[in-house]
Length: 371
Image 1: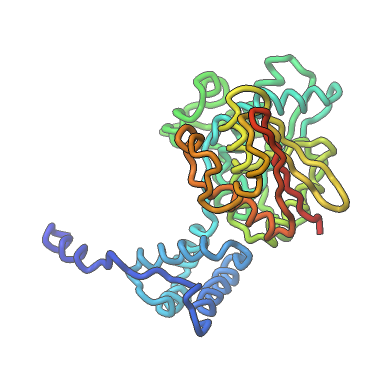
Image 2: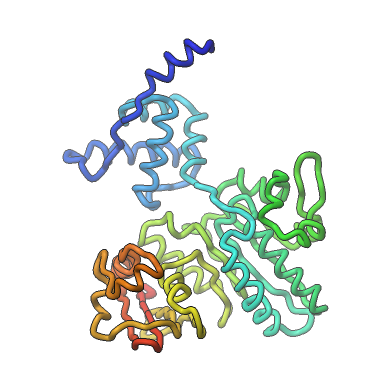
């Protein structure tokens, strides 16, 4: 357009459009329309998003409405029915493929220095290390783990092999992950030694070398419906669970437990309990683990940090509560994290507790039922 026409077009775009809010829907019409949208996407793609978190889906629907300058949800339903390309676009937005190489450096350092050596040490000669990465998206996380495992085996001249099963519900993501080709700017996320050893230049992109790609089996897999892979030494799910509602989270964690070998490792995204343990433990050790007890799975995070006055153990779970404002000044925080943690655990049918002593550290534990 000419500059004048561009200005006229921009001036007509709504800048303060009201958001779709299911919570203020008094007659159920908004929820009904959203369910219609999810049914349309299901019929088009075969993917059922009805058990994803509603607020996440609403934000994606709002984004698509804004792209097409549609103000009313009912009008968007009509638009969606007519346009297959919009069904595809909405499905891709729902899937939220957020990933990158070595995302969360501290977590991958722990994987490199502690977890992978421990797994390899537990194996006999000529054994195969088995790894599953559900929700692998476009493959960056998978290849990050593959490079770490291959580097450890090579550096220590171990007579071991490894196999990674990488799965996702999105065929387009799996196709890209299988190709293993990425824009050159990803080199900033990867240490130079790994770039030199594990990548080759391919036009304007860089591609993972064939010997690494051959260690990985990429496949389409629906973690809701399909049976889990089994006998895994490591299961990495860094970003997928946060988008599911609590019922599906519980079912998925149960499948993950079934997939893992005894003493296998579950590699999840960052949690408030672990972040707090790291933040408040400038010296000493941090321990994380889980145990089975009376048909419940109990997770615990134990640190040797500054500790908490035992008389204030319950107060720390109150919203916006800082039991010691000097720690707020030094460490930051809103006083919401632990309240959110307790709320999530209770929705899963469990509870969270803490035992602590000043200057001697804390242990947070939460348990959830297996059924």
